[in-house]
Length: 312
Image 1 (cartoon, helix red, strand yellow):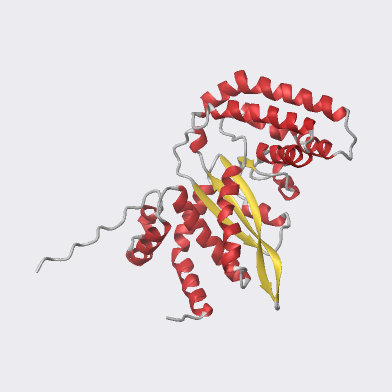
Image 2 (image 1 turned 90 degrees about the vertical axis):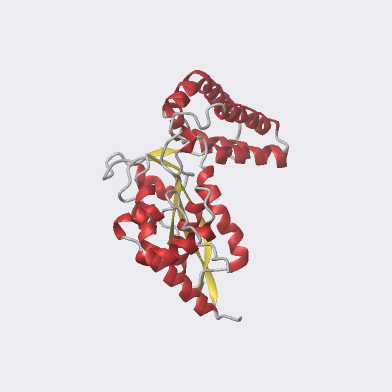
């Protein structure tokens, strides 16, 4: 059966409206986290016969690396551009730890006088390693290869406590990881002093050295991860989806996409089949008591038993 795009869009719009109470519960759960992963990616937005570059943002709560009991969840937001007002609005009520890249728009979130409280910046070591790895792989630069070797040593030491309680992670970092980071820092300072400011490796080292407090924040807090990979994984489906759905047709379409991505990604993070969950929830939510809506969240969901046909 041929269905028009407008009909399909209306169905998605109706579904997002019906599921908006669950989306609100997921948003509240995410923003109650002690630590968040944040990132964004581009999404083409249709505008008068052409497309402009809009953004989809994600904020991921995943406490599993430090053995936290809270279920993982992801919140997506849509915006027409990438100005700093958007993360300020998204995280207006949040105070905690934010793991993110060096996007300048997050800067005001880290101010000590921010209300309701300052957000602690935690940098992503994967971004730093990627810059050095590209130079080692493409330019065959020996110093870049040495940087990668030393950074890999930090990652290797961290793997031993992935999934351990925050207190165990902190103790391991103080005794095992911190000396490796201190040696890396000393090597970086010595190497940087011998390089021109126009050197590509110098730029990669400067990226980390100018943000060293954010890069070493994990050494004093067992809840912090070494990377922002949780947010990057959440955005991966959008990168693949752009090849299929091509663009968002309107601001409203982008906002609907953010709601559905929040629901689908949260289901996946909890090892729940998004299709089965959404089908069941859409069939039940109209008659479900509002006071017990949390029962329909992916981490609490129990599918209704399907009645077996009566034998003739």
